[in-house]
Length: 258
Image (cartoon, rainbow, N blue to C red; front, side, top):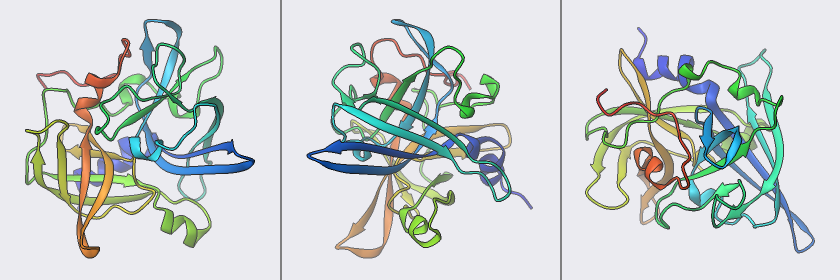
């Protein structure tokens, strides 16, 4: 018997999840950051004629990036026997305003744990992650919607512990229940009965039913009480993301009345 969440992962979500590797030079040393992200549908910006590739991740994983050039590598690791898809590029790291130059934008509220890597696409160069029909991209849940406590959800990412063990990144999928949808604070948060290891931060959180598979959040952190297990996951609702993306970036999202 199949489960909508797992079917959604295999058929609709996994192909858009990427392992993020960022490398930069600082004080004579080479520094590297690893995290998870997911590709949003091709976006547009009023100041650019070309399409934009938008990679959503957690803000805290990019918080230490410099403002100078960063070497980026996005990889979608395939199932055994299939070819990996990799896209490499160079862009500045943290930028105070998207209107000046694309890069990792930080125009969200300081305590909102989401960020976007915005990549202007050169004519004739299409990342392998975008070589699908636009309507196949999983929609971001509309700003006016949210899931309730008791809803079963799933999330995925590249845990660093497994990378160390296998000597390569491995996409892992998790499943749990929303213990509390705390949406009366700014920003809101989902408290989830489940586990999220280091490296999974920035991965997508989704809800599936028989009709659709919707991205509802970004993996943010794993909360422990006094350092003791088990803990709870803290996920950032992604439906606030469109409110904080500045300067007219248009993401593909579901309509309010779905």
